[in-house]
Length: 466
Image 1: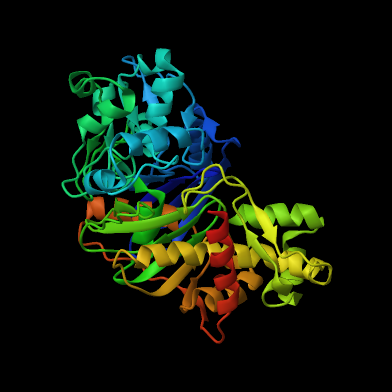
Image 2 (image 1 turned 90 degrees about the horizontal axis):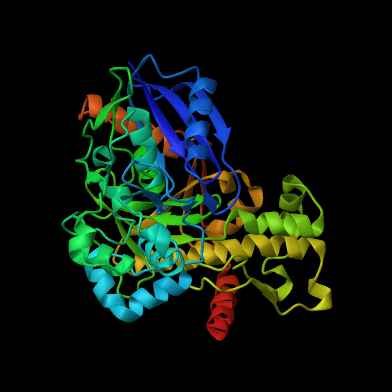
């Protein structure tokens, strides 16, 4: 039996066809997405079809599920047509809208209701931005959905917006779903769009499916469609997360996510109390700046990725006393959408190519340590981490991360864990008792030293800036 898992991320669509008995990928395909933080959903649909063709099709699969980038705002009119290009999670134009929504209620009110305080990433803030800046488009809204919801709808062949379906993990990232009951809060939707609750009640929101529910079939086939999930929830499924073990994902964004058997509420608003795709909760802290920190430093030093890694390994622990605050595109954790990056304590003797290269990795490690500390502050246990994403390939990061974070790190074999999580969900649509597939751990990074001073300097500099 084969199943298909799809990862529609910020940068690309990836499709894996998996043998249910072993978890082995038998075929895979990929197609890129356009750059930018505002993208028309048609590009995702085109990429999905190209990626499925690249993978040899999914006609021999029993089920398929889609894991997608979270929070993206897809607005449809009553004919099911896209009203405007989707605003993605990393579009920070709604930062003022987030501040306004908090001012109209309070951080505690938002955390109590939706599990998350509004930040520019969340869908609810993008809807407020739309109401304030494009009222003519806001007035056309007949349905609001997320990227993976829209793609599942397209895959089913439906043109009726009432057939839209989502899952609990992705829905909980909108900002207008009750974190305990898992039901929509129409009062929040009304608040965001500056309309009455009666008007909000008329807007179609995707039905929130049960865990592992068959929500439809691929158009013209008997291939079952699973409820899908948010990308981080998909990775958590594939990695079989349980209490005490969290994921550390380093890609476009940096994410620390842990499993909790009950709702998590962070009254500072820094941690998102999302739901997981398996019936639990997934407290999560996400940074906007992750692998792009290395991109910017690589361009500055005019070196390749491998050369940057080699330079960083040769640099001094602590980068000669320099500290980087790596908020190049603003930041989500901490919530500083208008921030910029900076380097502190730049002395001539410290400013070697090696130290500058290392600074990019230490700045990332410190940012992720801050995110981990915030997740821990909610009561979620983090005894060890699973390192996934493109950052797992870096020898410099493998050396620096355990020393700065202070916890042991396991490195699974490089793989498409978001897509694999979607595939596992698809397998459980066919058989709810389907066990998790084994994870091949290729490296264990023990805490052999502590670079405590690096993180303490970072916290001190960040406190001064804030």
